[in-house]
Amino acid sequence: QVQLVESGGGLVQPGGSLRLSCAASRSIFLITMFWYRQAPGKERELVAAITSGGNTNYADSVKGRFTVSRDNAKNTVYLQMNSLKSEDTAVYYCNGYFVPQGTTWGQGTQVTVSS
Image 1: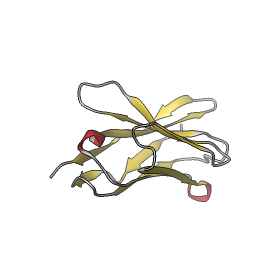
Image 2: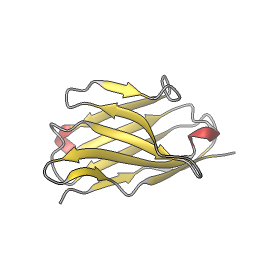
Image 3: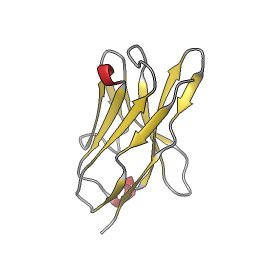
Image 4: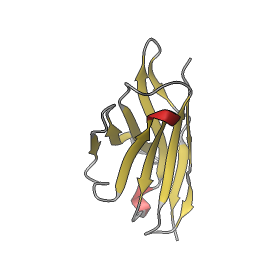
């Protein structure tokens, strides 16, 4: 069974940066991977996506500040977050669809942006 493990979250001041990692227990070579986030009292929202070919897409709220990337050799996806704002505070999850398991989520990593 595929497992996704996020890491890299923490407490950062407004304007700061963090890099999140999502490590998969098997190859992500052909898998489109996603980053979602969920703030307290809000629905989970899509933040960024990256296809197997490296094409990316972002939520309007993070465009120009966040960058998603992947290292297929390490079965890892990254989310570089710059110019962080208080409204970026959330639990961040990665996600991918793995055959035959289906949609798979990690356990999440907390990002808190506060002075």
